Length: 408
Image (tube, rainbow, N blue to C red; front, side, top):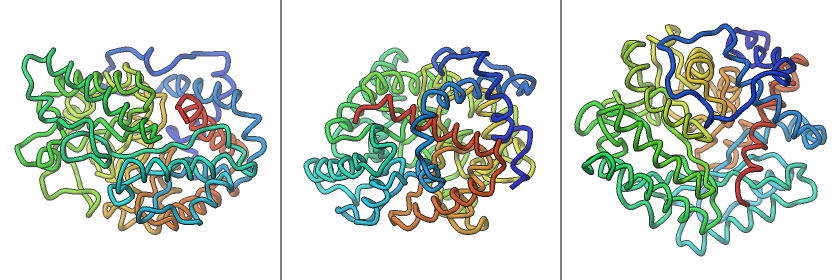
C-alpha cells in the first residue's frame, strides 16, 4: 500500500514521531484562535505527531499485547439491529476487536433498557482476553437536540431554536445548558460520546440542515460561538463532543444527503475556509475531542473530487495542517450512499484510513458491517511497511488515550 506514503499521509506522521517526542506538546485547547487562510505545510505535521508520540509512549505496553486484528478492531465503532446486542458483537468486544458502539433510536425502548444493554457491553469489554479491558468503550449516539435525539430528554431545544435566541450572550447560555444537560442525560445511561454539535453554517431556509433545525445559524460567527459553548459545557460534564460535518454541509440543498448518494459542494476554497470551516477554529480552541468529516466532495479543496473523508488534502491538509486539530477523527457512516462507487465497506475503511481518518463508524446497524471494516484494516496493517505500522499503532494509541479520559 505504498500509495499512502504521500505528503499528508500517516507515513509523514510516522517520520516525525521520534522528532516530536522532543518537540512541541500540548492539547487542542492550547491551539491559537486564528489561522491563516492557507495551509503552511512546512512543519505543521509535527504538532499532530507530537500528540501521537506521547500517546504511543504511554500506551505502548498495551499495544504490544495486541494482535493485528485487535489493533484493527480498536479503530471500529460497531452498530447492531434491535434492542438486544447480538452474541457476535459481544464476542468482538470481549476479544478486543472493537473500539465502541453507536446507538440509534431502534436500539432504545427505555432508559432502563439501554442502561442494561450498556452494562452487558461493559461486562464484555472487561473480559480477560481483551488487552484494552481497562479502557471504557466509546459508547455514542446523536443527541443534537430538537428533532435529532436518540435518547429521550435533554437537550430539548434544537440548534436553530438556540441560534434564534437574542442577544447572543443569552444564546450562548442556552447552548451551554444544552451541552451540560446532554452530558448528564447520556452519562445517566452509561454513554460517554455525543456525535454533536453540528457546526454546519446553513444557507437557505429548509435546506439539508435547516429542514431538521440542525444548524445554529447562517452566520458563521454565531455558529462558532454557540458550538464552542456547547462543546465546553458538554465536555466539562465528561462526555466527549464531536464537531461535524467537516468541512461543512451548510450549502447542501434539502435533497442532497450523503446517506443517500453523492453530494458535491462547489463553494470556493476561500468561502469554505472563511465560512464553513470557521466554527472549527473555536471548537478546536475549546478542546473538542472528535471531529466527524463529511462524505460530500469539495472540488475546490481537492480537485480529485474525492469525498472529504477519503481525501488526505481535506483531512490532513485542512483539518490537521491548517486548523491544527490534534484530536480524533471519525468518519460518518461507512455505509453511506455517497460511497457507492468506492467498493465494499472493507475497502472503504482502508481508503478512509489512508486519508487520515482514525475511527471508522460502521453504522449500518449490522454487526457484519463492523466486521468487514475490521477485516479491511487488519489486511492494511499486515501489508504495511514497518513505518506505516508504527503510524497505525499511534492511531490506536491516540484512540486509547481518548477512551482513558472518559468515564466507564
